Length: 209
Image (cartoon, rainbow, N blue to C red; front, top):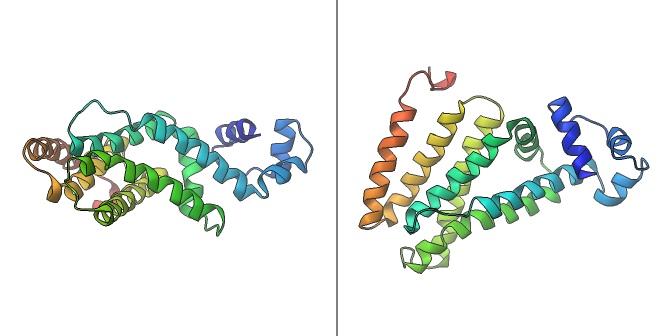
């Protein structure tokens, strides 16, 4: 049924299909989707959870040994996953950003927070963060930034390259206070690269003016 729902999203470009249409596409009875997912919202959040598993598996593979750069790499890997399949992931993540569901939404955010917290494992191991409270606060900041820029991307308000550079730019600013030595040098280089893209007027979103 999840595969059928994904196909319907790809075919229609949105999530407005009915549960009856889903049942027909999945070749099950009209009651079966409700029996499995409880509601359409439950179905869509299950699709989001399946997508999140890809983020947790793929985005946390690093090429850098630097604990600070690893955090930025994870974010850029997550962006690359989104950019790889916008036809499906754009409308799907519009659900997350636009739907207030008291059951599924908080659970998904809790699962998603694991991603941002995990990216800071190296920083904790190198004692760049004082304690778990610091890691939680920083992870929340990183998550809030990513979700904010993601909202602009899913609504097609920003260019793909601008999306990637803005994510890096925000992460760099959040990580700068805890960076030391080689990490600072890496951040300076990444900052210059991101700033170059963001200052390109051809890529700037219309709301900048």
